[in-house]
Amino acid sequence: MTKLNNTLWNALVSVTLLMSSISAFAESDPKLWPVMKEAFFAKRDMQEVSFIKIDAPRRAESGAQVPVTYSIDNASANGVKITKLYAFVDANPIPLTATYHLTDALGNFQLSTRIRFETDAFVRLVGEDANGKLYLASREIRAAGGCGGTIEGNEAAIRASAGKIKFKVDEPAVIGGVTSTTFNIKHPMRTGLQRELVSQGYIPAFYIQKTEFSYNGKPILTIDVGVGTSEDPYFKFNFVPDVAGKLDVMATDNEGKTFVQQVDVKG
Picture: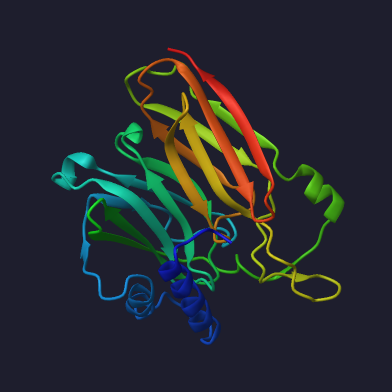
């Protein structure tokens, strides 16, 4: 599992049990968030803000692959510096889809990814600054069926291809300016809630749990990845290279396997 602190781990278990005990809603249910907020961030104040943004379709074609883009407008933040972003889908059985650890090298943070929806829900982005203050952005999306269901496939082939990486930096890179990088890793991202087609038994969770990006040896973005992230995890984000150098990524799955790749960044 993702290495959460004890508070977040206990919250994750509590909310998972809560979501398992209620039936699926035909529409997004705003009553879920207050319960989840208390479970994850007990008694902590949280301010709704406009400088944290979620761009996504109102209705997704597939609950298994819902495209979203998260961003932070530093100019509108009035000095608030977000160091960590928690991304939730509040109606998912396991609602915490990922936690993003941010650095100054990202500039105005902007990241695109794909996530799963079990039913219509709200995406909630909770930003945390260095002082522990919390800030909230929300967006409603209609999508369903992405977390459970039955799956089939050649297990040997699936595991043989797991970990294959496509990693590139848009050219020409802008030294001292905004540069975009795209990361995609082959992986089934099994949730532990899916059933094998023939036996109908639950298939064990098998997923990428951490992705670490560094530039010239310095961390620029670390992602604690959850099973709410879609199959074949995809992250496209901006960063600001201060000099030419090397961009590295290391992805780790929940079985302890690591996958690495490096790309050159030239001005």
